[in-house]
Image 1 (spheres, rainbow, N blue to C red):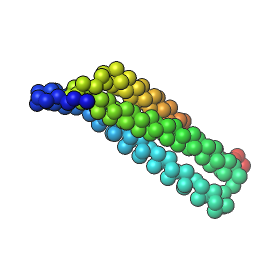
Image 2 (tube, rainbow, N blue to C red; image 1 turned 30 degrees about the horizontal axis):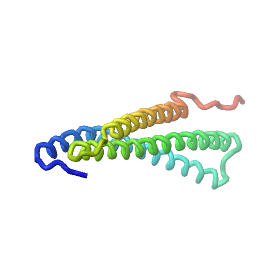
Image 3 (tube, rainbow, N blue to C red; image 1 turned 60 degrees about the horizontal axis):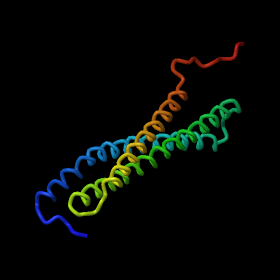
Length: 154
């Protein structure tokens, strides 16, 4: 394997490889936001489980809490899927950066692999966005905006 002997080829290789780094920055921000959502889901589930463990809850209320726990489990599954897709996306973009740099500074034929790697990373990012959207929609279904509690009539 021969590497480029001149500084211009190395400089161009670095410039070419840096462009996907901006995408990688967006992915890392998305991972942070999604991880924060997962933390909130876990905190809410622990709160409900602790309340249920005390045993001082009427049956109707406990059924609602179990239903919410089921929805939280589903939301957690969506968020975990989102984080997995984002992590795979970051790895593919990192691979793209390596391949672009090696392709520019050596004689390795990496263009096709770099193209596939980059497009696969974008596909993972789009799938992660779909998981994020689904989780967000699921979260808003849990909310009860301005619902008045039903009081038994006397």
